[in-house]
Amino acid sequence: MYEELFQFPPGREGYYGEYGGAFIPEVLHETIRELTEAFDQCRADETFWEEYVTLMQHYSGRPTPVTYLENLSAKLGGAKIYVKREDLNHTGAHKANNVMGQGLMVKRMGKSRVIAETGAGQHGVATATMAARMGFDCTIYMGAEDVARQRPNVFWMEQLGAEVISVEDGTKTLKDAINATLRDWTASMGTSHYVMGTVCGPHPFPRMVMYFQSIIGREARAQLLQQTGRLPNRVYACVGGGSNASGVFAGFLDDPEVELVGVEAGGYGLDTDQHATRMAQLKGSVGVAQGYKTRFWQNAEGQMRDTYSVAAGLDYIGVGPILAHLHDRGRIRAEAVTDEEVIAVMRQVMRHEGLIPALESAHGFVAALQEAPDMSPDDIILINQSGRGDKDIFTIADALGDDRWQDFLRQKVASFEETS
Ligand SMILES: *Cc1c(COP(=O)(O)O)cnc(C)c1O
Image 1 (cartoon, protein in one colour):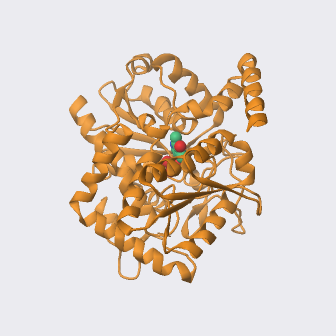
Image 2: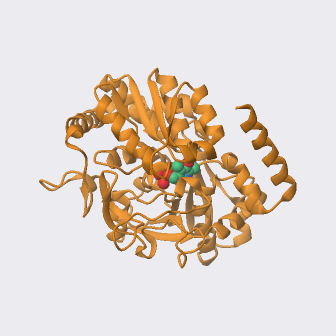
Image 3: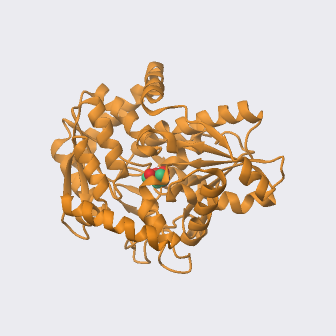
């Protein structure tokens, strides 16, 4: 099924069912064609994947382990719960897989500069890290609102040598940063590559990012077979744009007996407008924006709504076209869980297993931990822990309602802002 996804009918290159495509200005056609060609060449060259895996071993600690959650499995009394530890990557999340892979491609294309947009800042930090390592110039666009909210990430991007441009247009958030990055790319495409952060945007990005992230699923499948002698019954992953989910699911798409569960941000609940759910309960509707066609969280007039989630990385209006298609086909199940459920599960996972998942990743844990008790102790489930929660310290302290830490942390932030 995985390879079958990419056998496009004539005239439908880059489409997955009705989703995907490349809705881009004429001037970018040539550079997108060049990128597609470079990607095809890399995929056809066996030494490319080997080079990528070796780089990730030496630079990012791969293969990341699969950890058995002994205590929670016993406590819940159902399926055995395993976790794929993408939090142990350099820079703390699965984003490293994608940026390092694209970096290797940029080298092969002979370009010298990378540009990217970032909302919460995690993708900006990952891209700046890659650029420093590979010797590229790096420009990161970020909405002015986000620059103010994410001071520590801006600090690290600058230390890593990136130029961070604060975008003052529109609502001063992610979508304005995306427009600014596209403007830069149209003016600089001869030397610059746009590092897409997730499985969204115009073809070939969804396929390309899924290809690099598939390292998660390939490893996890082999590791589970080795550790347990069998495949999991279900695999859970949180879905923002959809890259960590696509990556872990890629390893199991051709195993029809493995159920794949994507978990979206339910925010304050699906009965409110305060969430970022597109697939579950078909909350989103089909539209075209940001260069591709998918299910967006928009109103009846096709206007994009404001998304909301406690997890900044899930706070996004679109979803990868490949995931939207697999959901339509019934190959993946989509669920949404609320902020409140996420915080309760964070507490449980920290206390009983000593893991600190990112708030994004905790969405996958919620669905898994809710369903595990109804399964048999012979069953196995796998959760993709996309990242580590250290970055969420202020939000988690706030949500847990611990005054002592809230005050202390606020003072720290205030003094940081004064000195920077
Ligand atoms: C960015 C991020 C996500 C959301 O992105 P996807 O493309 O949906 O994977 C999820 N988890 C973590 C830890 C992130 O940093």
